[in-house]
Length: 38
Image: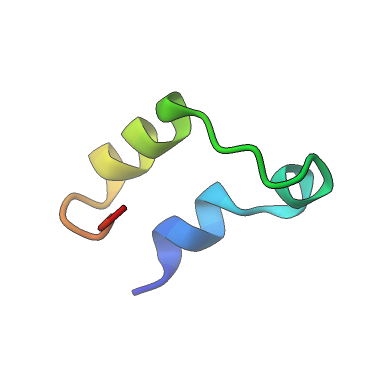
């Protein structure tokens, strides 16, 4: 599933040069454990 990628890379993030914070990754990992490989 590409759900984590969609959550982390929404339009707001894309507008700000796709700035992904560790908190975002942590939230996605909590919601979709094992789906985040990066």
